[in-house]
Length: 440
Image (cartoon, rainbow, N blue to C red; front, side, top):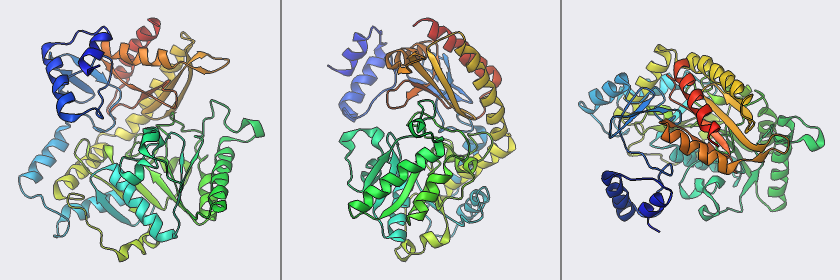
């Protein structure tokens, strides 16, 4: 069935323009690309926390974390345009932007992380971290959570089980359960979340050794966003990191989704756990829509890898660094991390009130402006309400609110709006979610 017929079969009327674009996508981009929602949406403009379709209708964006400081923020747009009008070239020439940006970025992190390296995407950043880990440890074994997403290069796809089995499974990668406190993770042996997660990491390391594999690194998204959003309690990640380091491996903190002030209390997700990573990878929010990503690394960790020349044609170019500097300026100047803390807490509180009305809400969790709302068929059994979650996501799209679903059963509403999201925006979201849940 063609994509157009599939959308029509779902009962959605497509405008001639929508049908034409969908047909062109199918012909030109091939079958691997996907569109959001049963009724695709065509956006032509963005501003702040709003996206506008071709008819000029506004949609509240409660999903997109790439435009971290808001869609088309004037300060970021101006910085990109100004630098693009002057010069854009690679890092083999001297330029102040990359130095100024690296200095500003590293100043937000623990002093041990002294070096920055730049790429274009988070996938590339994790791929580079992978290579550095191999060189430093001499190991080849990596540990990730069971539904992690770390990128789409060949190697990193093997560390991203959320892509499915078609992405490939490496004999050098071990998958451990996500630290899901809602589903009594570790309860069978009376452990807390941190101890249980560390135990699974230890078991994965032991299995590697039995198969002649030397551990290289534990890599986690510090909010476990693809697994279902697991943020608490702060500090629970430390025992697992200690376990990996005792085995000679590194800790890579994937901050592509958790970083840049999103948790509200800290600039970086790993800081909530009191950790100093060996490598920190970044992307998405870094340029608020302009392609820039990279990593921060401890000097002794990169020493062996540095014997090989590193070069990335576009990574760290003057325009991307101008965008990155502007993003930091806005986060700091507009108090967006504090806004994430305050608005995130308010939204969590209002969602809690909504849960008293709708039994389908089983759990609400997260930090700052990254929240997960787990929908269940029954609160006692915690059976996942996958179908209902899909219905709610699509109902909200029709009510012009954007969010998505996460977790192994796609039953967790994923809420991660741009950081200027206000209490008024939160009220709008909760009101529309109330209506969508009422229609189940």
